[in-house]
Amino acid sequence: MSVGGQASHAWGNVLARLAGLADEIHSGPYPASEQERIEGVAHTAKQWSCWSNWELFHADPRRPLFQRQNDLLTPWGGPSADYVYRHARIDPKRTYIFRGHMNCCDEFVIAMRAGFMHQAVWGTIAQHCASDYGIGKDDKFEIQIGGTPGTLPHIPIPEKATVLSFREFYFSWEERDPAVFTLECIDDDVDEPTPRVTDELLAARMERAITSTEESIRFWNNYIIEKRALAPKNTFAPTMKVSGGLELARYGFCFYDLGPHDALIVETDIPTARYWGFQLYETAWYDLLEPLDRLISTNHTDTHISSDGKVRMVVSHTDPGCANWLDAGNRQQGLVTFRWFWATSDPSPHTRVVPVDDVWAHLPNDTPSVDTATRADDLRRRRRQLTWRFRT
Image (cartoon, rainbow, N blue to C red; front, side, top):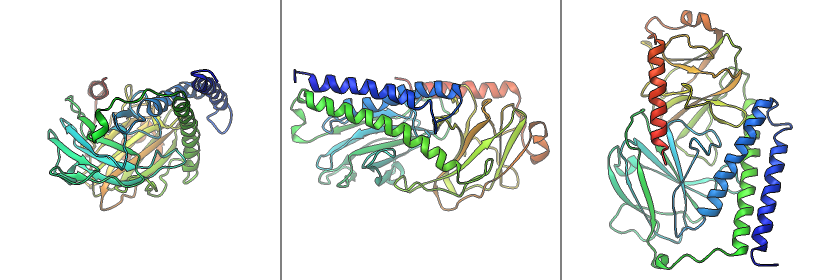
Protein backbone atom coordinates (compact mmCIF):
# COMPACT_ATOMS: atom_id res chain seq x y z
CA MET A 1 0.00 0.00 0.00
CA SER A 2 1.38 3.45 -0.88
CA VAL A 3 2.33 6.05 1.73
CA GLY A 4 -0.85 7.46 3.20
CA GLY A 5 -2.82 4.55 1.81
CA GLN A 6 -4.40 3.39 5.07
CA ALA A 7 -5.38 6.91 6.11
CA SER A 8 -6.76 7.68 2.64
CA HIS A 9 -8.82 4.50 2.72
CA ALA A 10 -10.03 5.34 6.25
CA TRP A 11 -11.09 8.82 5.10
CA GLY A 12 -13.10 7.33 2.25
CA ASN A 13 -14.71 4.97 4.76
CA VAL A 14 -15.58 7.93 7.02
CA LEU A 15 -17.31 9.76 4.17
CA ALA A 16 -19.30 6.67 3.20
CA ARG A 17 -20.41 6.06 6.78
CA LEU A 18 -21.39 9.70 7.30
CA ALA A 19 -23.54 9.47 4.18
CA GLY A 20 -24.99 6.24 5.56
CA LEU A 21 -25.87 7.98 8.83
CA ALA A 22 -27.66 10.76 6.95
CA ASP A 23 -29.72 8.10 5.18
CA GLU A 24 -30.28 6.16 8.41
CA ILE A 25 -31.81 9.08 10.31
CA HIS A 26 -34.43 9.43 7.57
CA SER A 27 -36.02 6.15 8.69
CA GLY A 28 -37.42 4.66 11.90
CA PRO A 29 -36.89 4.62 14.82
CA TYR A 30 -35.62 8.17 14.29
CA PRO A 31 -37.97 11.18 14.41
CA ALA A 32 -40.45 11.17 11.58
CA SER A 33 -40.91 14.86 10.77
CA GLU A 34 -39.02 16.28 7.82
CA GLN A 35 -37.86 19.29 9.85
CA GLU A 36 -36.36 17.08 12.56
CA ARG A 37 -34.62 14.95 9.96
CA ILE A 38 -33.13 18.06 8.37
CA GLU A 39 -31.89 19.06 11.82
CA GLY A 40 -30.60 15.51 12.19
CA VAL A 41 -28.27 15.96 9.24
CA ALA A 42 -26.86 19.07 10.90
CA HIS A 43 -26.62 17.12 14.17
CA THR A 44 -24.62 14.41 12.38
CA ALA A 45 -22.15 17.03 11.19
CA LYS A 46 -21.81 18.37 14.73
CA GLN A 47 -21.20 14.88 16.08
CA TRP A 48 -18.46 14.24 13.53
CA SER A 49 -16.90 17.60 14.45
CA CYS A 50 -16.96 16.64 18.14
CA TRP A 51 -15.64 13.09 17.90
CA SER A 52 -13.13 13.62 15.10
CA ASN A 53 -11.67 16.48 17.14
CA TRP A 54 -11.50 14.24 20.20
CA GLU A 55 -10.05 11.15 18.55
CA LEU A 56 -7.66 12.83 16.12
CA PHE A 57 -6.42 15.89 17.98
CA HIS A 58 -6.90 15.11 21.69
CA ALA A 59 -5.50 11.59 21.63
CA ASP A 60 -2.11 12.09 23.31
CA PRO A 61 -2.05 11.98 27.16
CA ARG A 62 1.39 13.63 27.02
CA ARG A 63 -0.29 16.74 25.56
CA PRO A 64 -3.60 16.82 27.48
CA LEU A 65 -5.33 19.87 26.01
CA PHE A 66 -8.91 20.28 27.20
CA GLN A 67 -11.54 19.77 24.52
CA ARG A 68 -14.74 21.70 25.16
CA GLN A 69 -17.81 19.60 24.37
CA ASN A 70 -21.55 19.99 24.79
CA ASP A 71 -21.31 23.68 24.04
CA LEU A 72 -23.39 25.61 21.49
CA LEU A 73 -21.67 23.80 18.59
CA THR A 74 -21.06 20.21 19.79
CA PRO A 75 -24.17 19.16 21.74
CA TRP A 76 -24.80 15.53 22.63
CA GLY A 77 -26.58 13.65 25.39
CA GLY A 78 -28.63 16.40 27.06
CA PRO A 79 -26.14 19.21 27.79
CA SER A 80 -26.91 21.52 30.70
CA ALA A 81 -27.43 25.26 30.28
CA ASP A 82 -25.59 25.79 33.59
CA TYR A 83 -22.33 23.98 32.76
CA VAL A 84 -19.25 24.03 30.62
CA TYR A 85 -17.96 20.55 29.81
CA ARG A 86 -14.27 19.87 29.14
CA HIS A 87 -12.38 16.62 28.57
CA ALA A 88 -8.73 15.64 28.35
CA ARG A 89 -6.82 12.41 27.76
CA ILE A 90 -4.92 11.09 30.77
CA ASP A 91 -2.70 8.11 31.49
CA PRO A 92 -2.76 6.53 34.97
CA LYS A 93 1.02 6.08 34.76
CA ARG A 94 1.64 9.81 34.29
CA THR A 95 1.65 12.93 36.49
CA TYR A 96 -0.21 16.15 35.73
CA ILE A 97 -0.61 19.61 37.20
CA PHE A 98 -4.11 21.06 37.00
CA ARG A 99 -4.09 24.88 37.28
CA GLY A 100 -6.95 27.29 37.19
CA HIS A 101 -8.61 30.59 37.98
CA MET A 102 -12.27 30.15 38.88
CA ASN A 103 -13.41 33.71 38.04
CA CYS A 104 -17.25 33.52 38.10
CA CYS A 105 -17.38 29.70 38.14
CA ASP A 106 -19.15 28.48 41.30
CA GLU A 107 -18.02 24.85 41.38
CA PHE A 108 -16.39 22.15 39.30
CA VAL A 109 -16.55 18.37 39.29
CA ILE A 110 -13.69 16.25 37.99
CA ALA A 111 -14.76 12.79 36.87
CA MET A 112 -12.13 10.17 36.10
CA ARG A 113 -13.69 8.08 33.33
CA ALA A 114 -13.06 4.98 31.29
CA GLY A 115 -14.92 6.53 28.35
CA PHE A 116 -18.13 8.33 27.35
CA MET A 117 -21.67 7.17 28.01
CA HIS A 118 -22.47 6.20 24.42
CA GLN A 119 -19.32 4.12 23.99
CA ALA A 120 -18.89 0.38 24.50
CA VAL A 121 -16.51 0.97 27.43
CA TRP A 122 -17.39 3.84 29.73
CA GLY A 123 -18.08 4.80 33.32
CA THR A 124 -17.15 7.24 36.07
CA ILE A 125 -14.50 5.66 38.28
CA ALA A 126 -13.88 8.58 40.69
CA GLN A 127 -15.16 12.12 41.18
CA HIS A 128 -13.78 15.19 42.95
CA CYS A 129 -15.32 18.63 43.54
CA ALA A 130 -13.70 22.05 43.81
CA SER A 131 -15.37 22.49 47.19
CA ASP A 132 -13.64 19.31 48.42
CA TYR A 133 -10.40 21.30 48.20
CA GLY A 134 -11.75 24.62 49.50
CA ILE A 135 -11.83 26.13 46.00
CA GLY A 136 -14.58 28.63 45.20
CA LYS A 137 -15.48 31.57 43.00
CA ASP A 138 -12.54 33.81 42.00
CA ASP A 139 -9.94 31.47 43.53
CA LYS A 140 -6.69 30.43 41.86
CA PHE A 141 -5.35 26.93 42.47
CA GLU A 142 -2.92 24.15 41.54
CA ILE A 143 -3.66 20.44 42.03
CA GLN A 144 -1.42 17.48 41.24
CA ILE A 145 -3.23 14.71 39.42
CA GLY A 146 -1.59 11.26 39.43
CA GLY A 147 1.96 10.39 40.39
CA THR A 148 3.50 10.33 43.86
CA PRO A 149 1.91 12.89 46.23
CA GLY A 150 4.00 16.00 46.80
CA THR A 151 3.42 19.43 48.28
CA LEU A 152 0.30 20.24 46.22
CA PRO A 153 -3.20 18.89 46.86
CA HIS A 154 -3.26 15.48 45.18
CA ILE A 155 -5.84 13.49 43.21
CA PRO A 156 -4.87 9.93 42.24
CA ILE A 157 -5.73 8.52 38.81
CA PRO A 158 -7.54 5.16 38.98
CA GLU A 159 -5.95 2.38 36.97
CA LYS A 160 -8.61 2.19 34.23
CA ALA A 161 -9.20 5.92 33.80
CA THR A 162 -8.37 7.33 30.36
CA VAL A 163 -10.40 10.58 30.41
CA LEU A 164 -10.44 13.49 32.81
CA SER A 165 -14.01 14.73 32.34
CA PHE A 166 -14.76 18.12 33.73
CA ARG A 167 -17.92 20.10 34.52
CA GLU A 168 -17.83 23.80 35.39
CA PHE A 169 -20.98 25.02 37.20
CA TYR A 170 -22.33 28.54 36.67
CA PHE A 171 -25.21 29.01 39.07
CA SER A 172 -26.07 32.58 38.06
CA TRP A 173 -26.02 34.44 34.75
CA GLU A 174 -23.21 36.88 35.48
CA GLU A 175 -21.51 38.60 32.56
CA ARG A 176 -18.04 37.98 33.90
CA ASP A 177 -15.03 35.97 32.81
CA PRO A 178 -15.68 32.22 32.95
CA ALA A 179 -13.09 29.92 34.50
CA VAL A 180 -9.69 29.35 32.91
CA PHE A 181 -8.10 25.90 33.33
CA THR A 182 -4.99 24.13 32.04
CA LEU A 183 -3.69 20.59 32.42
CA GLU A 184 0.04 19.92 32.03
CA CYS A 185 1.85 16.59 31.97
CA ILE A 186 5.13 16.98 33.92
CA ASP A 187 6.80 13.62 33.26
CA ASP A 188 10.48 13.50 32.30
CA ASP A 189 9.78 12.58 28.67
CA VAL A 190 7.34 15.38 27.81
CA ASP A 191 10.08 17.68 26.48
CA GLU A 192 10.75 15.18 23.72
CA PRO A 193 8.96 16.16 20.49
CA THR A 194 5.75 14.32 19.74
CA PRO A 195 6.38 11.72 17.02
CA ARG A 196 4.85 12.53 13.66
CA VAL A 197 1.59 10.69 13.08
CA THR A 198 1.87 7.47 11.11
CA ASP A 199 -0.40 6.25 8.35
CA GLU A 200 -1.59 3.37 10.49
CA LEU A 201 -2.21 5.52 13.59
CA LEU A 202 -4.16 8.17 11.68
CA ALA A 203 -6.33 5.48 10.09
CA ALA A 204 -7.02 3.95 13.51
CA ARG A 205 -7.98 7.33 14.97
CA MET A 206 -10.37 8.04 12.09
CA GLU A 207 -11.98 4.64 12.62
CA ARG A 208 -12.53 5.46 16.30
CA ALA A 209 -13.93 8.88 15.40
CA ILE A 210 -16.55 7.63 12.95
CA THR A 211 -17.47 4.73 15.25
CA SER A 212 -18.02 7.13 18.14
CA THR A 213 -20.09 9.42 15.91
CA GLU A 214 -22.34 6.50 14.94
CA GLU A 215 -22.56 5.25 18.52
CA SER A 216 -23.51 8.70 19.82
CA ILE A 217 -26.37 9.20 17.37
CA ARG A 218 -27.76 5.69 17.82
CA PHE A 219 -27.31 5.56 21.59
CA TRP A 220 -29.05 8.84 22.37
CA ASN A 221 -31.93 8.13 19.98
CA ASN A 222 -32.54 4.84 21.78
CA TYR A 223 -32.05 6.54 25.15
CA ILE A 224 -34.90 8.98 24.49
CA ILE A 225 -37.16 6.14 23.29
CA GLU A 226 -36.44 4.12 26.45
CA LYS A 227 -36.90 7.05 28.86
CA ARG A 228 -40.12 8.16 27.18
CA ALA A 229 -41.59 4.70 27.90
CA LEU A 230 -41.03 5.01 31.67
CA ALA A 231 -44.04 7.24 32.37
CA PRO A 232 -47.18 8.57 30.63
CA LYS A 233 -46.81 11.83 28.74
CA ASN A 234 -46.92 15.02 30.85
CA THR A 235 -45.90 13.19 34.03
CA PHE A 236 -42.55 12.66 35.74
CA ALA A 237 -40.89 9.27 35.78
CA PRO A 238 -39.34 8.11 39.08
CA THR A 239 -36.12 9.77 40.19
CA MET A 240 -33.14 8.56 38.20
CA LYS A 241 -29.45 8.20 38.96
CA VAL A 242 -27.29 7.32 35.96
CA SER A 243 -25.43 4.08 36.54
CA GLY A 244 -21.81 4.85 35.71
CA GLY A 245 -22.47 8.61 35.88
CA LEU A 246 -21.81 11.12 38.65
CA GLU A 247 -22.74 9.75 42.06
CA LEU A 248 -23.86 13.20 43.22
CA ALA A 249 -26.38 13.71 40.37
CA ARG A 250 -30.12 13.02 40.38
CA TYR A 251 -32.64 13.55 37.56
CA GLY A 252 -36.37 13.61 36.90
CA PHE A 253 -37.74 13.37 33.34
CA CYS A 254 -41.13 14.52 32.08
CA PHE A 255 -41.89 14.13 28.36
CA TYR A 256 -44.54 16.69 27.52
CA ASP A 257 -47.06 16.79 24.68
CA LEU A 258 -48.68 20.22 24.52
CA GLY A 259 -51.03 21.73 22.01
CA PRO A 260 -50.67 25.41 21.03
CA HIS A 261 -53.04 26.55 23.79
CA ASP A 262 -51.91 24.12 26.52
CA ALA A 263 -49.70 24.73 29.54
CA LEU A 264 -47.91 22.19 31.72
CA ILE A 265 -47.71 23.19 35.38
CA VAL A 266 -45.05 21.42 37.43
CA GLU A 267 -45.52 21.69 41.19
CA THR A 268 -42.81 20.37 43.46
CA ASP A 269 -41.21 20.57 46.85
CA ILE A 270 -37.59 21.68 46.83
CA PRO A 271 -34.82 19.10 47.08
CA THR A 272 -32.33 19.58 49.87
CA ALA A 273 -29.49 20.14 47.46
CA ARG A 274 -26.78 22.69 46.67
CA TYR A 275 -27.90 22.93 43.06
CA TRP A 276 -31.25 22.26 41.39
CA GLY A 277 -33.05 23.46 38.30
CA PHE A 278 -35.31 22.81 35.32
CA GLN A 279 -34.33 22.73 31.65
CA LEU A 280 -36.16 22.04 28.37
CA TYR A 281 -34.90 19.78 25.58
CA GLU A 282 -36.05 18.92 22.12
CA THR A 283 -36.40 15.14 21.94
CA ALA A 284 -35.28 14.49 18.38
CA TRP A 285 -31.54 14.93 19.06
CA TYR A 286 -31.58 15.54 22.84
CA ASP A 287 -30.28 19.08 22.70
CA LEU A 288 -31.30 22.13 24.72
CA LEU A 289 -34.32 23.78 23.17
CA GLU A 290 -32.86 26.88 21.47
CA PRO A 291 -30.96 28.39 24.46
CA LEU A 292 -29.92 31.50 22.50
CA ASP A 293 -33.48 32.33 21.44
CA ARG A 294 -35.78 31.17 24.22
CA LEU A 295 -36.01 31.06 28.01
CA ILE A 296 -35.58 27.32 28.53
CA SER A 297 -33.90 26.96 31.92
CA THR A 298 -34.01 28.12 35.51
CA ASN A 299 -32.19 27.03 38.65
CA HIS A 300 -32.12 27.61 42.39
CA THR A 301 -30.68 31.12 42.00
CA ASP A 302 -33.46 32.59 39.86
CA THR A 303 -36.57 30.47 40.51
CA HIS A 304 -39.48 31.98 42.43
CA ILE A 305 -40.45 29.91 45.48
CA SER A 306 -44.03 30.36 46.67
CA SER A 307 -44.86 31.23 50.27
CA ASP A 308 -45.87 27.61 50.89
CA GLY A 309 -42.29 26.54 50.12
CA LYS A 310 -43.11 24.95 46.77
CA VAL A 311 -42.08 25.76 43.22
CA ARG A 312 -44.50 26.01 40.28
CA MET A 313 -42.97 25.88 36.81
CA VAL A 314 -45.08 26.69 33.75
CA VAL A 315 -44.19 25.26 30.34
CA SER A 316 -46.15 26.61 27.36
CA HIS A 317 -45.82 27.95 23.83
CA THR A 318 -47.14 31.41 24.72
CA ASP A 319 -46.07 33.48 27.70
CA PRO A 320 -48.74 33.68 30.44
CA GLY A 321 -46.80 36.47 32.14
CA CYS A 322 -45.93 34.61 35.34
CA ALA A 323 -42.66 33.88 37.09
CA ASN A 324 -40.99 30.53 36.37
CA TRP A 325 -42.18 30.32 32.76
CA LEU A 326 -40.26 28.14 30.29
CA ASP A 327 -40.79 28.52 26.55
CA ALA A 328 -41.85 25.28 24.81
CA GLY A 329 -40.77 26.83 21.54
CA ASN A 330 -43.77 25.91 19.38
CA ARG A 331 -42.69 22.26 19.51
CA GLN A 332 -45.57 20.05 20.55
CA GLN A 333 -43.32 17.46 22.16
CA GLY A 334 -40.31 18.01 24.39
CA LEU A 335 -38.60 17.03 27.62
CA VAL A 336 -38.54 18.77 30.99
CA THR A 337 -35.47 17.69 32.95
CA PHE A 338 -35.35 18.37 36.69
CA ARG A 339 -31.75 18.13 37.99
CA TRP A 340 -30.49 18.25 41.57
CA PHE A 341 -26.90 17.69 42.73
CA TRP A 342 -25.27 17.24 46.15
CA ALA A 343 -28.65 16.23 47.56
CA THR A 344 -29.75 14.83 50.90
CA SER A 345 -33.41 14.53 49.86
CA ASP A 346 -35.34 13.97 46.64
CA PRO A 347 -38.35 16.02 45.50
CA SER A 348 -41.73 14.70 44.35
CA PRO A 349 -42.85 16.75 41.34
CA HIS A 350 -46.48 16.60 40.20
CA THR A 351 -47.93 17.90 36.94
CA ARG A 352 -51.17 19.04 35.36
CA VAL A 353 -52.08 20.29 31.89
CA VAL A 354 -54.40 23.30 31.74
CA PRO A 355 -55.40 25.87 29.10
CA VAL A 356 -52.70 28.52 28.99
CA ASP A 357 -55.35 31.22 29.53
CA ASP A 358 -56.24 29.55 32.85
CA VAL A 359 -52.69 29.29 34.24
CA TRP A 360 -53.11 32.05 36.82
CA ALA A 361 -56.10 30.26 38.38
CA HIS A 362 -53.75 27.43 39.31
CA LEU A 363 -50.95 29.55 40.81
CA PRO A 364 -50.69 30.98 44.35
CA ASN A 365 -51.65 34.60 44.90
CA ASP A 366 -48.04 35.53 45.67
CA THR A 367 -46.80 34.51 42.20
CA PRO A 368 -45.05 37.51 40.63
CA SER A 369 -46.05 38.73 37.18
CA VAL A 370 -43.42 39.41 34.52
CA ASP A 371 -44.01 41.88 31.70
CA THR A 372 -42.81 41.44 28.14
CA ALA A 373 -40.00 44.01 28.46
CA THR A 374 -38.54 42.25 31.50
CA ARG A 375 -38.81 38.91 29.75
CA ALA A 376 -36.97 40.27 26.71
CA ASP A 377 -34.24 41.77 28.91
CA ASP A 378 -33.79 38.42 30.66
CA LEU A 379 -33.36 36.62 27.34
CA ARG A 380 -30.84 39.18 26.07
CA ARG A 381 -28.86 38.88 29.33
CA ARG A 382 -28.74 35.10 29.04
CA ARG A 383 -27.72 35.26 25.39
CA ARG A 384 -24.87 37.63 26.24
CA GLN A 385 -23.72 35.37 29.07
CA LEU A 386 -23.80 32.25 26.90
CA THR A 387 -21.81 33.87 24.12
CA TRP A 388 -19.36 35.22 26.72
CA ARG A 389 -19.04 31.82 28.38
CA PHE A 390 -18.50 29.97 25.09
CA ARG A 391 -16.38 32.54 23.29
CA THR A 392 -13.35 31.10 21.49
